[in-house]
Length: 509
Ligand code: FAD
Image 1 (cartoon, rainbow, N blue to C red):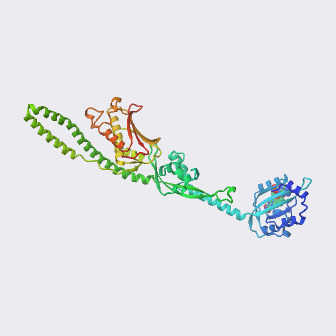
Image 2 (cartoon, protein in one colour; image 1 turned 45 degrees about the vertical axis):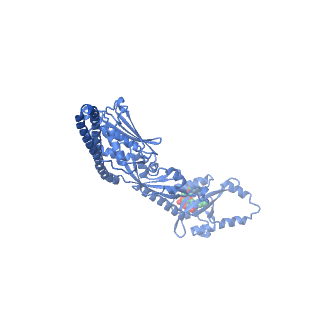
Image 3 (cartoon, rainbow, N blue to C red; image 1 turned 180 degrees about the vertical axis):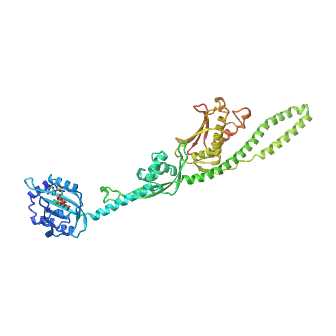
């Protein structure tokens, strides 16, 4: 909009090549309702578009005040700001509610410029307006729809987040914002994608279509809380650029829309049933293992007197052949019985390799051990990594491994008069390893015995509480079957600190 002074300057030097009637024709035929008034807003001139917009012919408006167009509902302050600007020789723009000759109301977008003479005095006002009723209706419609969509999206019980190709969240809803506090993570979308699609970052920037999937469930664990199960579905949408630079160039950017629903209660039901089945399977496996180990230990211990008998036979052979023969018979009968005993040792059933989540597995173990932990008054501190990559392994074997470690810890602390009974379980990813630690506040294993703890049939306990001592050797076997390592150390509180490490790229044997 040219300033009043600029207009005056132009009038002072009319273009020599442009005849004056061209000015009049241009104003008259312009596609904008134009009127020129005196200083009291009395109309002196109105162009053809003015008639088209208002319905009044120039004959009907000339001599009348512009207020004839007013619907008398435009707030007083608007006119006041209009006149204040005009009195200060400033142009004014705004929206007014006008009435046409037909009585129909319309929203006018009006610009008034003071016309200033060479002496700097305002002589007239130039008014230009257009009917923006339809534009306003469409604008309101878009605004209403946006508000409606926003309130529906915000009221939805599902969390929604839209990511650009760099993984930045462009849009989210209330349920998503709540996830930030509930899960205690900076960006739930990233945490969930980490869990269900490990390589999402490169896929998102290189080939976003490969990030589209339906109903993948992610488990999010946090300290001492119950896990949350979230089902994630993604879809690709085009984000249209609203920058003027891209008006003629198509620069649509694909975005990834995440729809996240909480399926925790459903999973909790399934989990309860699964835990019961698991409990039964583990109890069965424990019974069989105890039988296997009991028989193996019996054979192992019988070997010793048999060897003594075998040496006695060779000593007696020359001195007392008949006693030697008797002993030989007894020895071979004993060996036969031992062989029959060996045959009845139940073999361990082969187990398939699956992709397992260690957090989930440890939760199962804690669930199964809960009655025993409660009975022993042990307080459990559970520190899971928020998400863990999957591990290829034998789930039952791994559960037995961690159950053995938890059982050992309970047993160490569950002694008369022992006050501090704390068990800390933690998972983490350190470099290219998944690390599980089981720490108790029991008496620990003396340093001189620690290196022997993994030997078969070794037990640090004596007397009535002494048992077979195959737990840690079996645990070590399971860990090495999974390409991992297990180590024993002393916890800062003096208890036992067991560290189990699995390589992220390690395949079980
Ligand atoms: P008014 O009595 O006219 O005045 C309302 C307020 O404006 C008062 O506070 C008064 O002090 C101040 N005011 C009025 N006239 C003057 C003046 N000459 N100098 C200083 N202050 C003044 N109005 C519309 O509703 N629709 C239009 O399309 C429209 N187009 C206009 C185009 C031009 C070029 C101009 C100059 C004005 C236009 N107006 C328009 C404004 C119109 O002239 C009236 O001021 C307005 O309609 C209010 O009228 P009113 O009778 O309710 O109140």
